[in-house]
Length: 118
Image (cartoon, rainbow, N blue to C red; front, top):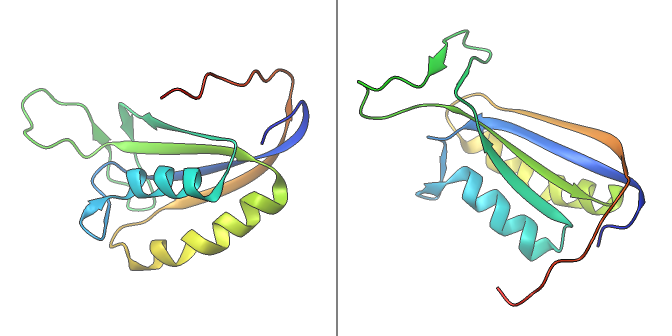
């Protein structure tokens, strides 16, 4: 549960084509974060980027498959984020391409609980 005050932001940089157990890695991470009870998760799709390989990937209309950067942002309490990170970190050792995970302290200024009907 998120409340006003100090929280932790976990950012995971991967590609939209990264898979884990035949599913998109970003989906696996978001569903795992929900099961773990973290405050929230958002997947952001980039239009251009490069990583440690220095290969630039961007949106091209003539390409059939787009390999684009994805950032997953997850917010929660520091202890919860640390426990979640310990759980998912082995997944990244099994994927073929590079990734980056960062963690930072943030200050939540406003939080309103949404309707849980969905």
